[in-house]
Length: 340
Ligand code: 13P
Image (tube, rainbow, N blue to C red):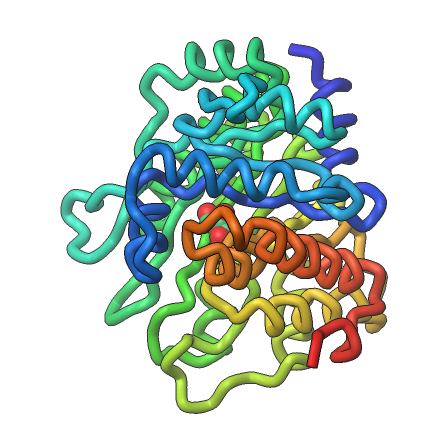
């Protein structure tokens, strides 16, 4: 294992105020988003959509790396260029989602465990040969009646840590993504308590599995009110709660924290990121950035509608969202960035 390369890559992923673009939805999730707006759910449509995103002019001004799923990393542009090569040649780091998705956790009704450790060492070696520099594994933690259980938190934290150790062994930076789901009527305080417990468990397991913290990127949820909670915390309350939670749980050795958007609107995700980057109550030891999927892609997807004549406009919207989040990392995002 060349850990210096891994730590260098991790720093690069969060350098210069850039963020990480997540376009790694599984075939099923991508199809679900296509179905909602009437786009055909075929392999070629998914290929065309990913082509549109990856070839957005000037994307690398704001994006350091792109996370693909296994289907996309094996696909090609119409001119025969592999997507993987196109991304690398555009100056962005190539990333891959390696988890096998969420399955019901036995004995824990309503809770999920992420699978995919079997055969992971061999898959990582293959991806490394394809030019992959970082990977992603997402664990899903649901808030509900008597949930999450300690059994669910510990099982997912353990899998995240085993995945992270295998990535570093293969010279690949692991994005460690424990996502506390926003769905529900829970308060921001409940989200804070659950996120704190989850991050403590994750860093405990990362330590036990001898993961080098300088060579990971954490991808957490923000600490936020549940989507159906009647009282929605303000932007500054979310920034305060999120930074305080992270200061209590994430060691300073971690180079960067790249948030998921989790179902927030594109604008709100930019506003929250900006407020966190502007936070001045104490020193923040890690780079704070974005690794959004929906909050960058959704507006562009709605413009595209599966039609070639909309590609340019969709790309302009995608670039716009990438730029807004880059501006948030520079503490410069305001309403003025949004078109009337
Ligand atoms: P969202 O930003 O849409 O939450 O997606 C982030 C992600 O990569 C989920 O794994």
